[in-house]
Length: 242
Image (cartoon, rainbow, N blue to C red; front, side, top):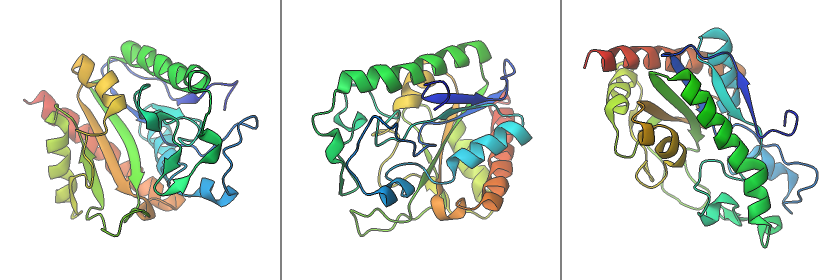
C-alpha cells in the first residue's frame, strides 16, 4: 500500500470525462495480518481479479481514463461489499477456508481499509463529476466450487440502471465477442460499489467483467485496455444522444 492507504490514483480526472476503478486489483496482504493460507492462493482469483490492475494502469496512462485502484487483497477486506455483509471479511472464498479471518476484528479492518477506500473514491468522483464510470473486474471460466462453465468472454453487471450497459453489450458484440449479462450472478446480487457511488447519484456506469485468461498477459491487458476505452467513449457518446 502507498503510505498506508488501501488505494492509489493514477491520472487526473477531467470534470465531465470518463474514469475507471478497480476494487479487486491487488493481492497485497499487510505483514501484520496472517490469513493462514498457502502463499500460492494469493496468485489465484480468490485473492484478486487477475489482469485488472494492468488494464486500469494502461487506461489511465495511455487512454486518458484516470483510475482509482485498490491496493489490498479482497481476502483481507473485500472493498466490493457492503460493510454489514459477512463476506466483507471472507472466512471462505470459492471453497477455500481463510482461517485467519475467523474471529478477526471486523471494525478494525473496515476502519483501516474499507472506509478510507470508499471515502477517497467518493471525494474523487464528486470532484470529477464523470459522465461515465468504468468498474473493472475479471472472472474465471469456471468457479472452483462449481462445475458449470461461465459462457462469456466479457460480461456486464448492473442493478437498476442499465443505460450504459445496454450500449456496451451491443458494442462488444460488434467486435465479435461473446458478451451478455453476467452469470452466475448479476448486479442485482453484487453491485455494492456502483450502487453506492453511481446509482445513488444517477451516474451512468459500466461494470465490466472480462475472462481472466484473456487479460493475464501484459500484451493482452494493453489490447483490452484500448478496447474498453473505445467502448467507454462510444457509450458516453451514445448516452449523450439519448
